[in-house]
Image 1 (cartoon, helix red, strand yellow):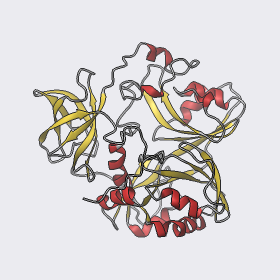
Image 2 (image 1 turned 60 degrees about the vertical axis):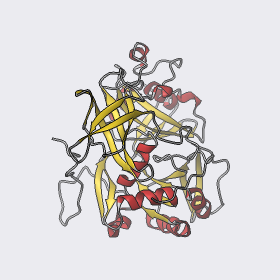
Image 3 (image 1 turned 180 degrees about the vertical axis):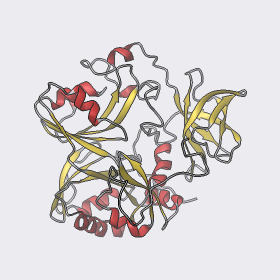
Length: 394
């Protein structure tokens, strides 16, 4: 039985002793988070804080929307290095990886042979023959190793941890933290190397919030404590604080950002999940290409707008008393003032504008409407720096 039943959930706690946590990994900032009272989920066998005792989820949400928030994530970078690195990544992903230039990022969406989705993540091209793939939760390493057999490429775990600084003040913090000022150019999906307090760090203009932001990559040779102290000093005048996944989850739903393994899975194609724009149908061969040629282009994933309830994960979506789909994500949006979520429908018969009833967290069935994603900022102008949107707290 899964948790997320709206009543209880299972999170990681810390307690004295040793043993039976061998496969779990703490990120380099674990001790810095400890005084805040963190509660962790396990993501890629890494601890990622869902919430903290020192602030509420809503406080964290408004921190992200109005100032700047830091999440030390469980994303798992893999390294691909060698003459065939590009060729392998182009085989593994639906997007044309040959178009990703050095110093740029790409979106890596991987399918099985039948077109079902495996995982997604961000590809960083650090050098001509060297990439990092910061993947979402999923077993991608073994998949990549198997399909890289016979190629001149080394796939390894560089033991890198990803943190993201997100919010309207994020770039002000980057400029203050960088020893040499703001890196230029540093547009959306760019990669740069900057000096933070004398330590060179890889950063990217990416994030999981659809807010203005960037991510930084802590490597084994870094002095993590000194690195955080430097960033904290730079961020303090701009209101930067650590927050948790629960607060970010609300914003990513508003933004139409999907979570691998829950919002899409092996039974959904990119087209089912509304991710067809990330399939380059005319590129060379890639895993799943043949199956996707004949797959339906009609999406089955839509937003849910519910005025009187919070959609419950795994809750039913019904029309005239007949179940037509399932809720894959749900929350109350403090900004919109009502319940929001994602609907994965059994077939594409219904779409935006359809009136439905949805199972909600309090056990009730409430009237709702299917809507297009994202809920606002349709052109993603906020993360691109083209729109400044700092809402007032309700």
